[in-house]
Length: 368
Ligand code: GDP
Image (tube, rainbow, N blue to C red):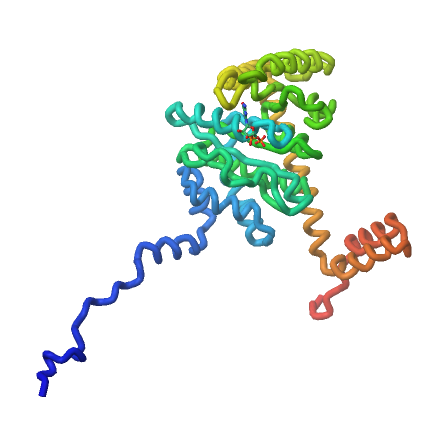
């Protein structure tokens, strides 16, 4: 008989099974734990990136309770906003926006304490559900820095809705201590105007040799620009870039001088070699210094706050309208009536507005 001690079948004491990784559990539950309004605000003001990112998720949420909390957080953060330089950047895909932001942003954060936030308004996410600006591989080294915060465009909804959310994200970033805010957009559609209306300085990036039409160099976009930069002025492209710069400078002269007292400039640069990028930023700083001295800086920002109010009203009304139960019931039917020619757009819209503004039927359960 084999001594049970020597049997291969005996149960060995073994080692205690490792418990669940405690730190992971703590991190996950921490992430899920909902934070109070005060915790959000404290976290943002301390510059905590995870809390900032969570607050931005609230801003971008379509849930009414999230929206309400987001508004409260914004309200508390507002006194800590405004202390930044806000720069809008536009240009067609391939013009070199992200390359320039990468070089510019990296040089800005080399100064101790300087932080950069890069936000985007991408109208393509509304048109196609895809995204031109959303690619995560862009601005790799900037994205790796603790001093930079890169957030892709909020997706979905109207351009007005996306613009409102981006404006709000910008304010939270300022409260979190980002002194340099870059808002990027693709040069298509109305998004340039939306970006222009939330920044201090608007930069148009162009290329030499590409057709004006292709570059969105429509009068409207050029007119918004405080600076036009011809990028890729390197190698054999340098001469063509200089020629394009002169042409752009000449074109800028045709626009009426802006209220800012600033004459828009045209420069060349190369994100590849870094040439011209310090001059670009010096141009931004000169503009800020000039407009702060002549009062335009504050005036423009106050007007932008007024515009934000109108955006909140418009988007709020739209949300209320679209979530109104009686509207939801009728909207699709009336849309079809219009499409099939059974009614006119005008009559259908009027009927919906009447439903929306009609007083609610008295609640039979309520006692008078
Ligand atoms: P975006 O779509 O406007 O953000 O453009 P990207 O920054 O992604 O640049 C588009 C392409 O142009 C990339 O392949 C870049 O490497 C290239 N590029 C960007 N800047 C320069 C530059 O200054 N010189 C040259 N030669 N190529 C550049």
